[in-house]
Image (cartoon, each protein chain N blue to C red):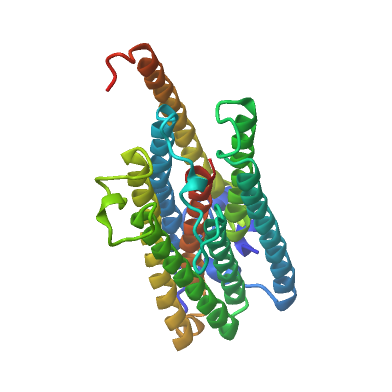
Length: 130
Length: 230
């Protein structure tokens, strides 16, 4: 099915057997990284889980931040290597990632702000709440 | 890897019309745009979860005290089954990316093999999800026939009602994505087996359903952290 009015970008993605070996090696490396991070998260969840730790203390806060950072590392590997976004043009990469990141950071900020306010209201007006 | 996307092309030619300035096909770009909109839905779910649990922090139940069951044993194994599900989904993502790689070499046999593994991994995950729902709905006594302590959208024996609702909506919405992903993968597997893509000259369809499948895995990574771990 050859058409001369369309550029078949997918044909340019073809690679040779040697390239394939290198790419597969990279895939297995990323698999190992993802598995280790998941195992680490589960171990942390069991040892320092909410059941054994003061959820209002600074310790739990740092564990939460560690969970989020590990998750972002995992997400980065999945998007950049498995979804091949790291191999695409810079324009496409930013078209996809930037609007999403800006919107979600904004949404997170506004909801965090509002739920903190709700908490404050509940404490200040506990005599009328529920 | 991505061939033309890594080549240096003159800006004038790149943006001069008649070609994609991103060096991707229409279908692949539209799949990315769809995934952004889908990611916004899941982002909405997860930030709403964060909002509710932040101001209900005193009543919110501890996940490890609810999800400690493992099929075939009565031992107390917190989080281990969910971790296993996460691992299964990551492995099926790996077999998917191996199928994409085989497609770039026009290796029909390997594409069929890795796509088949991906479909099986997705099916195992769906089964695990069903078991997880069964155990959650059955409530603390583990019996689904006793309605008194079953978890539903109207009643939650574990804590605030919203906890059960978020569980059903987030994992349910993700599970329906896994289901449609398995169906799409199965269709592509059948077409690869029939030699459609061999005749077409490229396996871009495998790459496109692959993007969707990796997205499903990506969402689960976030659900695992924000629903189960934190």
